[in-house]
Length: 460
Image 1 (cartoon, rainbow, N blue to C red):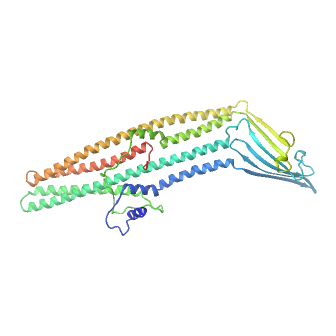
Image 2: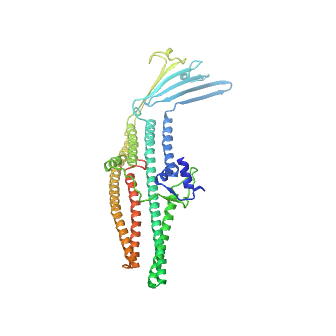
Image 3: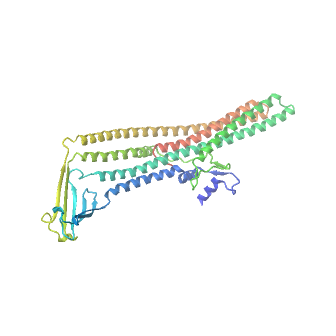
């Protein structure tokens, strides 16, 4: 029902003839649900999911087969068939199951197997390089880190979107209030001009007063036109944040207006809590994930300094029942040992040294980013509290100007003041009201900026 209400409100159906208010809460709900950037942020999570899926593919079992035959002058030289399955494991051990069926007049003796074939069940184990980490495990761990990083990146994208949307809304709300101020000012100036003109005709005011009243009308028309331009611009900016379910932009109808920027708003925050939140800021999390990824790379590069020591062992049997095979390392087995190691390790040491330097660089970047985020947060806290104090002071100032205008109007009606002083009082009050509206918008935007600096979004 609420969703339908928002659609009716924003599309301006024929059922809406009167003006309708688009509240800040409803506006932000719409931005969260349908803005393209919000959808892009959600798609960002899919990158991490697919990257992790691809990395897990490194541990998928693989089947293999190899067939080779040679026949010449009615003689079968050889016919070799090898097939099996390989199962890599997280512990770096690769399990294997192989079936060989070979025959032929000139078959290599070592390939001779029983007529029904020979089964080999075994494993390949790395005892040196690749014992604790290898390329597959490093890729999987980095993919897991990348998936977590996409969550932090999504949150940062949404936080920035909410801040931009909030700033646009309150500017729109302030310009709407300012438009009302100048419309009221023009109305008063026109009424006063008609009154002064009538009084001139009756001989109560000199002709110069009509000129002054008319110039006030022209001046306020110009101010109103400027306010209309500002309101039109911010309305167009608001339109960029409003999209429908079909991913089409929405244009606000003229009967839609924002909530009053001067209405009170709950500011629920604690400076100490914000200072704790900034320690888990999405931008800082991204730095941490980058460091974690580089640390996995460092571990892998350090592992390459070890020699390659690989042991292969296979049970050999004519049946697929392992219980009928010979005892371990007694009969019917095939095994091998592989050893390799560069003499100087210059390539491996250089690669490891480069990765260590990159890790140090990223750690320094992280510390700098933390300092920058803390400094920005303190600046936003100070800015919000200062604007909050300014608003209180200026609210009292507007109240004082209203009383001065009321007194000046009373004096004018009693003939103790002049039209010039009344106009001056009104202009001062209108300018103060505009400043008050802008300050109220600045305070609400400053609150959003303060939360954004701590790494919090609109919902937090």
